Structures are given as structure tokens and as C-alpha cells.
Length: 136
Image 1 (cartoon, helix red, strand yellow):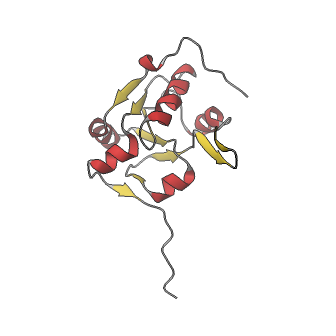
Image 2: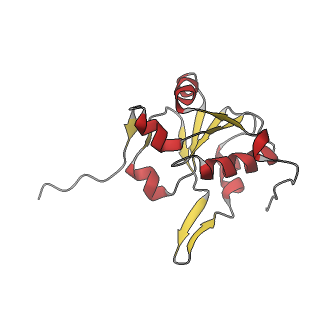
């Protein structure tokens, strides 16, 4: 099922929060939607009790392309009524993803300005999923 972005939804309608606000919101139960690639996510992501990784862009041999199943994948895991923070590496992809989610009816979604880089700059807790090197 394909959904298109309403031409009336503009980035100005998207609510953005800085990483300090995001950290507080995560502690109060907001869900975190990390829209970076799976490799970026595995290398490190913000520490959050409820975190989901659904890439907005996919790496292909031709370069990065938009994940055409993004909305479908999000809707299979998150409800439009959920409190959701959307983050990426620096804030650009998450702004696009948040704009698309708002157009699709997600009312309580916010973009995390500055993204993971700002999170790290603030020395906030992170998790990594890199495999440990074997001891052999």
C-alpha cells in the first residue's frame, strides 16, 4: 500500500526538539524511531527503553535511495497516536521522515534536531550492537 505525502505538509509544520529535550521525553516514555541505516544504528544509537530502527534511506550500489516501504514498516510497529521521536545522524533524514509521518496522520511525532551526532556531543548514553571480536 503506497501513501503519498500531502503537498500541504511542510517542514515548518514539523515539531523539532533538541537532544536535551529528547532525552527528557525518552525518559518519560516516548518511543524513538531511528531512521538511519542498519549499519549506522549498529555502530551506535541513543539509549532508549523503546527504540526502533527503520531506515528512511537505503544504501544501494547506485547510492542512497528512499525506502519505499518506510511508512508501511513504521505503521507495522508504531501507532499514529504514539509519542514518537524521530532521529537520524544529523537531523536531515529525520526531518524528511517526520514530515512524511505527519502527512500520514502521525500526530505526536517530533524530529530530533541535530540527531545522533548532537546526542554524542552532549555525552548522553549510547548503545552499540557491534559484534565483539573473538578471543581466538
